[in-house]
Length: 464
Image (cartoon, rainbow, N blue to C red; front, top):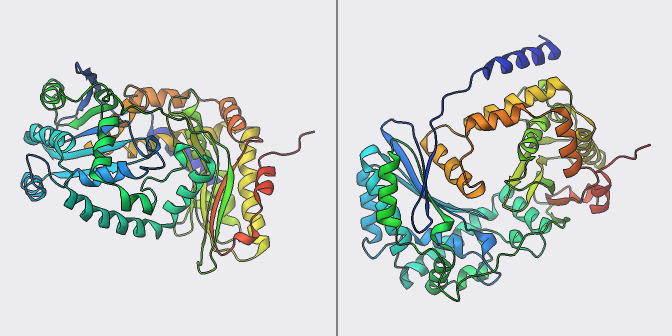
């Protein structure tokens, strides 16, 4: 079968795949007197995931305490007034539960996956962790060493480093430029008092959501949340409130010339859109139009996404290429991350020129059949992200913080279906055409990459 026939067959299969929408239970939402929200989706089964989503992360820190949110996440499992660290670990193990947490630039999350009958225990446990942790000086010192070792591990994860570098130059001097882990000097200096002050400032009920899915009863969850989270304060104590500074996209570039590396890593980004922007689904759809490429996997040459297909044919050492659309409360980053083992200037020029040419080409129009294929791909990816109770609970918590409500799959699909080629052209022109750009690179071949002025010129064509 030739490439054209393969594309047609793929489009036909994709159209059939989403002719019917899978059933989805409604998300029930209640608000406690202290303004803490409780949101759940009851899907039955024998297990449930329940967690607490908090509207705070590294962007709400200061230069002086950058890293404290992540430090707090680590400390939350080190003992409470009711449970020692050992008792906590034994209790979780005896339940057969999974207890975890993570920190991002805008959110901090604590969640547990448990059996149906252990949902009340999970809510009580999460409450104890979040409201009664002791933060002993000895535990702080032990965890300080753990975090410093984690920082060393992250520094060896080039993709993580590149995206931290990208944020640094995209949002120079503003909160989103800070890393989640914080600088080493801060980690060595953060004290138990710093952690307690951060909790008092940011862990308030209106900024918290108890979310759950699976074998959970909403009314019972509301009662449990009231029993165990009802005393969380509505406001921070006097003297603890801080002013939230907006993060402004400035653009620029940062480069780490490293001849010891075999592969170059690059991220090229524009200012994207915030979570609540009316055009956010159109920009997400643009990711599917761009496509992904992985040299370790076959099939990219037959992709309906032109850029991914073009890269598969270039002799420029591309190993991985993927677009990203990162959203925040007031801004976003839209761009591409790629790696290459290229070693000749001509190959570098071909690679960057091809990528920027195809990105700018999106602003000139999109074929109907390509748009339909991209819609189906986006729907498929969204459904994959909702596989299991933990993934569903993650979406509920994130949506409640970002949108103030859960956007159903039916509404999401309907909004995607409404997107027309003219919408893609309008949104990409707003985001890409002749716009400021941020670039982060690391590797042995940076000397061949266009300077920031050359990259900036690649965001438009001369129009007659």
